[in-house]
Length: 130
Image (cartoon, rainbow, N blue to C red):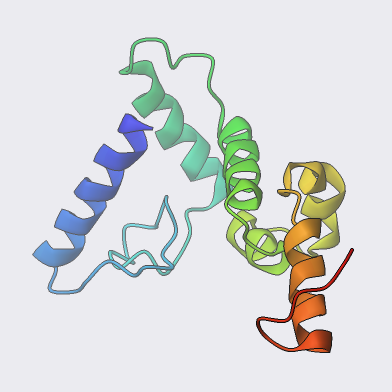
């Protein structure tokens, strides 16, 4: 996590040095010609650069970009993000893919859903017996 935070700071500094801001929706690993983060690295270039960076971090030699993608999807679902947003951030063509693989990481929200529906039916502040 610390490595990713440091990387984001470097990206923001690089973007500011070129006179642009780092986009909130920018890619974690952006191309050199897109300092705002708007264009993703080509996977081969990303893997090559990632391997060089990883070799400098003690204990990170076994971490792969694929594992980071798993972490990203799992974390986003745990934080309550919808499948469309997770799929877009992870580069999946369809939200069905991350839902099938990571859907079980979605927080249980059934009680909140039931309360919301009851409030719509009964009106706010109405006590119902369930």
